[in-house]
Length: 270
Ligand code: PLP
Image 1 (tube, protein in one colour):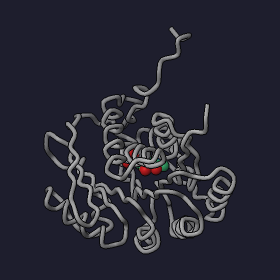
Image 2: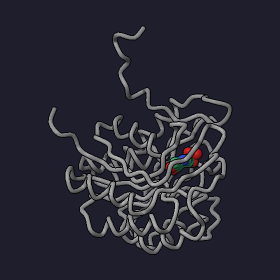
Image 3: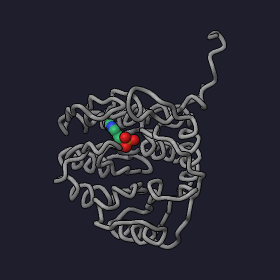
Image 4: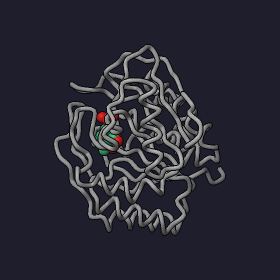
């Protein structure tokens, strides 16, 4: 096999395997990209929520990035849970120093259960040091509220939020409307000039743990394969829509989106 495209995720570990680093690496595989990881924090997490968080020293996060970029190289990079301002500053420093390829920021603030995954005092660092380096930022409506103060309940509101976020420096913004009511889940992609709406049939299921990570990871994988931004985001949306269709109950709480639809069953298994 020739060298596949290579993507790097800088994010937290979810011990339940549904979100975070684990979701990113499954998605990278599903998108035929070699996945590498720089772990920012280890969460003790199940389908019922986050029980504990161990944040790694920022220098350890930087070292994970430095060694893989120096040896292997990276075609595209995404960030997920960054935990605190020291880690954000270390990641911003790495992104400015190194060649990380197209840079996608999923501005993870909390889990679907409401457990905080980013310290509140780190939000300013996220906006001021990381957003100007981003090719794409992918907030959901809860994150839009934390980042801009805007309370969004309509498509017009999503467009206004995309403009406000674009003013903070990223080249593209994807505002995800999955939490709005309606038959379709509509996202708004904005590059400072044009708004593009991406729509998919809403699937009524509580088992959507890892949705945001999976969308950002699939988009990053497409960028690593050389796609332009609109094509990459469409590919990311198609992947996550299929993964939500493939979601399943697991544990006593919210189950994960599925990646099995991308994996051929082992012919030796019954
Ligand atoms: N845990 C970790 C480590 C994550 O990175 C994320 C999302 O990025 C989550 C949990 C939250 O996932 P969800 O919002 O799907 O519950």
